[in-house]
Image (cartoon, rainbow, N blue to C red; front, side, top):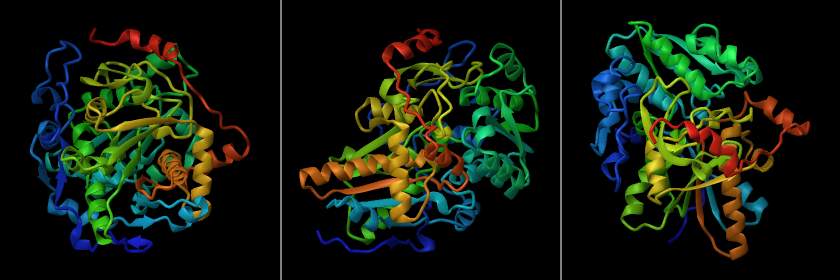
Length: 453
């Protein structure tokens, strides 16, 4: 097959996907149903209406293969979609690899990451059902920033509970959210009962996404005008992100190529789902494509967690879901990839990994930053610490192929830029970034409190 040599692959505006792809229609094994946190009975749609709009609940449980994207959302997507797919010629040359390396660049969105793909959709559906305000959590700040802008687009108020360590490390993320009119609160906070409880028991905690989720859910449950919005993990969030992978397939067709490996970093799983899920039908039909999730060794949910029912938050307010988990009480160290510091993984990602359709690997922080610098110095884009995990995995794949003398096509999701993460790079230069690894014994203690035995 002849490969077209180009650097930037752009789809015309009218090729923005008209539908989100729902992987639930093609999964060999569906995810086990979520359970009510009080009764442990199967959750019904009515249980979720207190914090989610009906339309998103329907998407959460749908098994329709394609769900139409409303015209108003597609018009907003046109501000940055289709996002470009780049061929990393300079990186290939530096590595001396025969591989073709491509990266899908989601950093072109107004907020600098892929998160806006779902934030716009969630704000749209909440506005349509009469909600006035959204409460959410954020790890590194990308999701909080995206929802802040989406709420501004639909005239909604927005309150963001930001994990304390990131709140302190990433002050410009806070400012970004405030520019868009959102309220940004360090979590754990004194504004909720769960926040007060955590601060009393662990006053020096760096915070976790599990705590911040509890605070946002408590906030939403306490006000009739407020719903909760989540930036990852849930089925409908993964659904909204599939515009990424659908565009990648079309862009590779334009240069007469098809990937051998598709890579995404993985915390909750949204950007990984976005780029890999549209390739699942191909894999099920026998196409030889590897789909790889990359997580930090400091929070090795897929690679060292267990596949079990667990809470999505610390306080046990959310439904109990079947997923790979490190235990809802797990507190990872304050690594700079704050968006990957989550104890669980998307139930959809977890099931597909359990069934062998996805692979997973965990990487140390030093190697990740080394790869990020290599990428920045060859391709000119400073990647976010989260996205840098995908960069490192792509570099490793290219070097293995070089040793084997094989030319592979490698695609990864550069899910966001690192312009507001330069403090992380400064810490790396200062020698303050350390690798953290966990043994099975380390993790076992946190798994003793799983809600379903």
